[in-house]
Image (cartoon, rainbow over all chains, first blue to last red; front, side, top):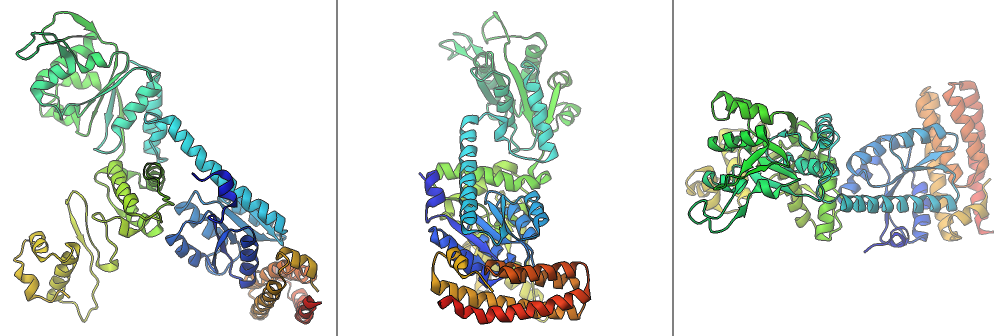
Length: 468
Length: 109
């Protein structure tokens, strides 16, 4: 494991120095190398950004006044794509207001030229130390938060913040029924667990039931439990999910799929606060919170007669809506950082972050599977990555990066998207067909039979046409 | 025109490196002197400020306090769009730069 001392002293620490003046880079590089740091040099903000596409340094030192992309613009771009890399701005004597401006925009420190070598060393070590401690702090907090905290629901968009605030507030009212609405993969169970945890029920149990995942005739015994002899095969008493959730929380996921006969029984549980095990007359008082969740429009199910209206009103006490990821795309960089942190620990890999090109692809994708899909996508990328930045090539199946001729289809094969660019002289129906064949063939690893299956054509087509 | 000992200290006592560094500084300053002249001729005050600012930075790195001070004066004159003052300071800047170029041989003493 890398220690604090390793981190600020080790030759493994890499520093990116950015200055348009060769003399300044010579000085910076020689000084940093005196302390055994690896130094990467760039003579412009753009060159530095292309270096950042390939590698993630431990620190960036940049001049402020540069032609083209100036230091402040470079700083802001870096802070968007690599918020964890500390950044020291180098500014000239007499321009302290520039330094203040840089600090306001996210620089971690600044140095006024001409600086003393001791000042440079102190600033560099301070920034590396702070960065190391911040990372450690985040790891410890994540470990303490475990799996159940609101901290695990990452996002800064107004919709997600509103959902979290509603969750925090209802956590103080431990018997209020909560209704979570959100598409699949938006984090309904995560929020339910957070509410449970924050309700002071940490010691008690959180029981999740997927109403769509259990066969209708088994669901009743699963929920209520039964006594010996209740039905053929009931050779002993069995606690149901309600019993197991005593003093805790039960999540009834996909409540819209609850069979009609059980809807009446659940209504009684909610109205009277009691239930009976199958085969028993003994009333058991409920002592748990019910959280119901669905991705369906429950009001519409009521209108079509598939869901009881009285039950709808009983569970619709405190609704919270979780937004789909496509409506909070600004949270994608944060979520990516969050998941990469998890995979870093789980895989023991150095995963410095997501490249700008890969981030562009992540930002452009519609994410029909929401945060779960993003997490799966990044997990696959983390496994494929060799410890460098996540690149478009690490996102196979979901994206590809063949420039203007990209063939992309999402995981669920809901749509196929083709982009092609042609020279006007070259453009013809034949050219388009040949390009489609070529792209599909590439996508299928040059397997003509598979490509023919995808395109629903005879494989001979690939032999007849020019696909090279 | 520059503090040799101080510069040597900043470069970890590496004398060959200091020679390389000074050559690079003089080249950078010469480029910016050209930019400054062109900017003043075109009354492009923004570019003039930037050129003077860069000369100030490079001169500071080189531990040439006098040249850095003159470049600062030039930066301020350009910020105030004072052509008369800027022309005077430019002459001083050129003279100091030429002197600096001559003084570079003193590093071998």
